Image 1 (cartoon, rainbow, N blue to C red):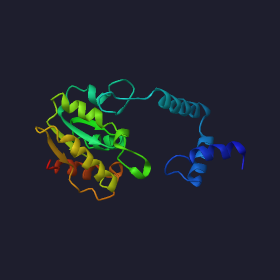
Image 2: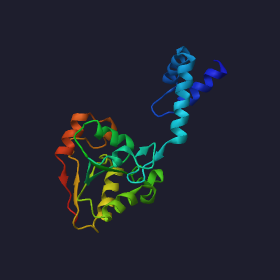
Image 3: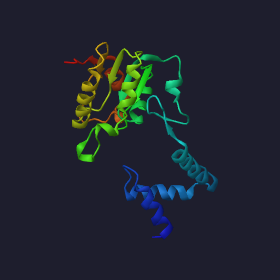
Image 4: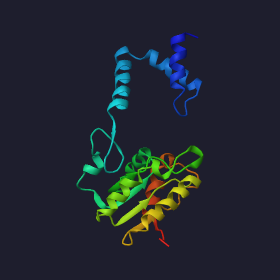
Length: 200
């Protein structure tokens, strides 16, 4: 195999879910593309990696300090949906059923992977609630052992806000399912049928 081809296949296969066979197929497709399209793709990737930032309010990916969702004055700021990753936020947004704010944790608590509560952006959520505008927090975290651990930790953090209504999305989403892979109808139903969580 060509050293150049082997290098490209090696780099592409580092992406999650991409094995060497798929990486080879992608590399061959790139080779068939117009050179200017490949250059444009490369520049987009470099721009994305070097210029993307995190929203100061919710930890969403953004081109500016405040993301489009947080900057949208028409959204209901009294409701905050807590998700693990930006991909989960995008999955919920695709349903067009939720018009509140978000808080992206950036992962879940996982001692096995060395992810502690301090590694998550829980502080942004607590700061927002402390300002007094938030009336409901929807916890939309994947139903896994790590997700349940994170939810338990969040519940302990939120006990200091007695006025706060805390709900979780209904479990039409199976235990162990990743939110980003769940279809829009299921997410819509889960949001509509969310249940309140006892603070006790």
